[in-house]
Image (cartoon, rainbow, N blue to C red; front, side, top):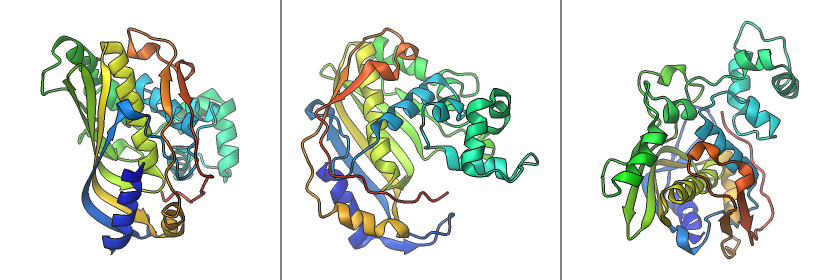
Length: 288
């Protein structure tokens, strides 16, 4: 994962210090691209320990079309908690619950979760119902039936629904490409939190590429990650500098244990990561 460390170093050395929506402050570059050959290993970061269980559960949550955090909370996946909780705090039903109390209610009270676990029409909604279009299913059918098409697109950016979302999509546009019996994916990410978000995004879309390739009977090719505003939050500088002292370890391997004909039939239990070696975890606060 030297590609990721090169990104970190470039932003630390050449980035522009900017204010941002969260009032944390960032060091930022505009426009950057990384390329990972998925046939050489699964691009799971090794310079800090990655909680890939959360990454995979989130992807299957996107695939399901869900926009409610309850399935994630039940699986102890915390990725979206802050945004859902912020929405609840700003509602008329807020009763001064702490985050932990709120999450316990989400887990135990299905009716409460239906109302206060909703994030609005975020990724899952757009993937499976973009103004009535199941983009993910159409994408897979297109790859299977017309692999040479230049229209293998999946978009999460729906201007008519942006204002209803807890967070507008950061990883917003994917294009898939078939050549030499291999499936490649390019992701455009408008806003890239390099320390916390980007390692998750790399692994998530690499897994999605593996799953679609498996359905279509293809091998995996490249994952190309194109970043718009690539930034490191000021309160992550120490963590990034620590990572830059660490040498990358060999990549792990992704194994699909059970094969299916439909994307909806895959689950977390079908996936296994083998030979994952990493340096210890590095903790950091998320900016909301």
